[in-house]
Image 1 (tube, rainbow, N blue to C red):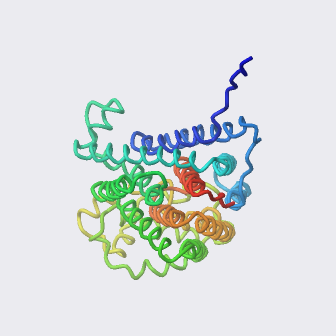
Image 2 (image 1 turned 45 degrees about the horizontal axis):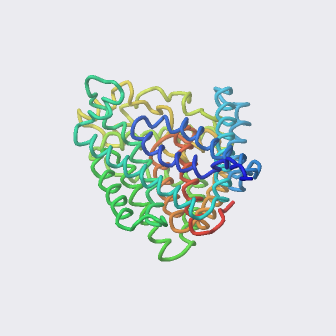
Image 3 (image 1 turned 90 degrees about the vertical axis):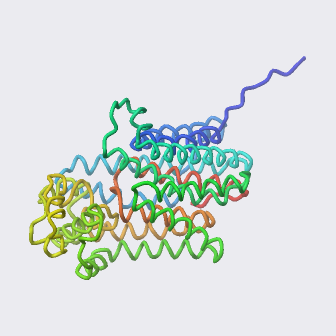
Length: 413
């Protein structure tokens, strides 16, 4: 009598591969969708793992370190100007990180050949996103305008590709070390990613993609201490951010030669430092950058004079209503931590950086590259609480876990 076939659940590998395929494409179409895609995908990985009879995977130690600044953010709701917003952010992102870490633990149990398939999906996703970004650039943004149902192409549409290029920059250091993907394909992806970054208007992503690839190369040559050194440097950067930035700003030459967006960041940091000095220990509370006193004002003539922004163009650009002293966030992770969570939050963030350096070292050269690229973007762009950005970092951690499994190694905690 024939034995009936049983249906074997697909486990964690299938949803993990789909997630890594989809995220670069979502970044191209509408980057804010990364938060939703990552939430669904990471949950699917956890559920897929549980359906195979292994139970629910447990988050690792690095995730627990990441919860410490969020716990302090939750406590800071007691004095934050928007306490509900601070508490909601801490709880939402805390859950997000726990799910992401559990998904990484699930992928760490896959077979090496399954992990290779996951990475091939990432290669396809990156390749298609790079190709679409280049095509969209060549047609002046018409491709994305059509995807969004726009009849005309807004002049600012090209700048909305910055998060897509940042996504490529963060994930690209994984590519050179992929097993099961032919080296010509890997080389084409790296060169295509570099070309895309340097053609499109995404200055921070340009720096990040170079930093990530250089760090990965250095770690491949010199060993895992490179990743630990990056983590230690980031820890020092978080602890000493007000001192470092405060010492740097007065020594800068005139900002007239900079792009206005870059000069704007420097003026934002100058304003943020003045507010940090008022509450250096506890900070202004989680999400305070959105509501900080004076943040919605434009810069005074005295400030513009101090930084040499005296041309008619500069006065016109910084006279616009949206050239605010602090629009939503500081465009610098350590400065935002100090502003909102004070020195206590900075110390907790420094502990997290050391943990990330250790985890990156255990992930091989690609770990050092991803950490360097993500840190570069975090120092120059985006807010520390943005869900899509946290989702991207969790997806990058998932890719690094798959990379280790493809080599038959277990994932770091």
